[in-house]
Image 1 (tube, rainbow, N blue to C red):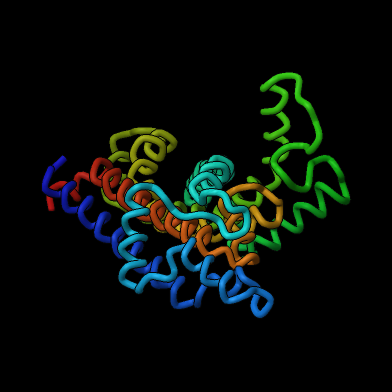
Image 2: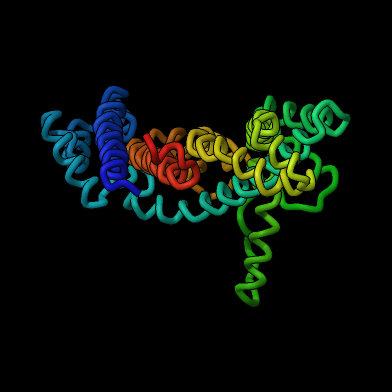
Length: 322
């Protein structure tokens, strides 16, 4: 890989992250003084309000607050939650694994299933199979994630009560082993992961189908067929690898939408991840937690785009010649 190319991509990612840190600071300052909500005016005394401002560094000039914020962020200190009085980093670290589990599972299934459906539909273009898959994918693509989640809960947790409706584990249960606990978590994961999968499935299907249709009309596919190779081999060995390239870009671009969907889905299913943490922070007007989750989500999007650029460089030789 060209060192110059990689350096340029990393530098662009770092500059974007710097902009996010600056924007993150001033965004929440524009929203007002956090101590106004925390102090519950007018019940609190002026002395109590001044003490709160000093505790959170809000008694300093704006530039001084910004310098402190940047220094703390670089050191990994994201402040103290105004509600729980716990370090924001600790709350994020507690919630992050659950979000990674949910988003990772849903995204993986949606990518594999959507890609497979896209290949099947493209190779049967105009047939009933294509029409059925296209209609189903368009339906899931147009459906709001909160509606999908509610329907899943109504069907599989209320009408046919075979799955838990929320949380990540059964409360009050002492598990005999880590395997039993993992099985319980997996059972609670089914519905939110299904909602996440259905939210993403339509986009992966449509992109893969469209890409496959274009690739199947290329001259090299005709040449491979003319050499006597079987159709299924041409599709598997030659068409699919080339059609997968747009999915790399989609996965990076889609990460931001995944974050938004995770907030809604985690809230509906009471899944204790970053989405649920963000929703609670919004309700409580807990600005330090909001700043922390916004920064983590933004960092994830920037990192996803950087990794997509690097992966695309390896997958597409045409990029290497530019």
